[in-house]
Image 1 (cartoon, rainbow, N blue to C red):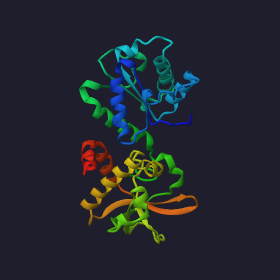
Image 2 (cartoon, one colour):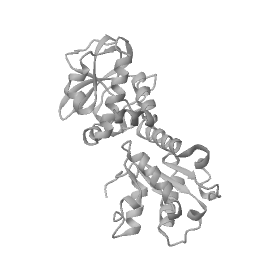
Image 3 (cartoon, rainbow, N blue to C red):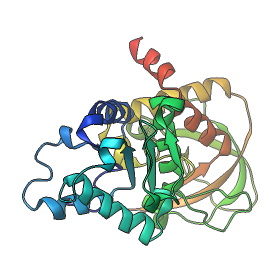
Image 4 (cartoon, one colour):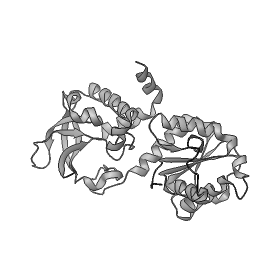
Length: 291
């Protein structure tokens, strides 16, 4: 099994499998790859205990659907193996941020997990749980590069390919829909109007989501292979382009080296915030799909 093969791993008792299934489907429809064992009936086959440990040790985020039935599972149950694995990872090794607990029936949560703030399912509902997962994944994918006072981020998944950032101003290129990068990744071409440093700008320059945006809309590999992720990013970007056609943005220009080729790109807070907000509004996105 590959490390980080799942973005989210869901642990639950069979009595609450309907909650796990609904949440799995909500995550799946926006491109989040989640482990819900009923969707992968043979995934933990063979060495069951070892495979379960791998899933819950190497997922980006674990989620427990806590219930009275969950707490009462016998010592030799699968749930107990999941729980022990997560306790070791998140409590013993202090990986608090990569665990979310959802209390589904107001039962008492074991004091071993007292350091983890939990969500009450019936107070906030499944959609807000889904949004909490998106926000937490966004936090886990991001990091502060320490180079920019405004705390702009390179994504973790390929931060090593991206160079230092330079403050700039830019506008969205009027023909951004006609570029190769738009077709393949949904990247919007821009033109620089002001730059704080003199450099050669004989490049096609694209606006990319920074590490402040979940990899669902930022990771080139996901955008190339997951049609829904690319469609969501394109629809959100078109809306951003239409409402900001003549606007001059402040951003950060940087170079990215990939396969010995140098590319020039920019980040922008307003674009990041537009993508993050749009991804939360799932109902609006579903309306787009119907047209």
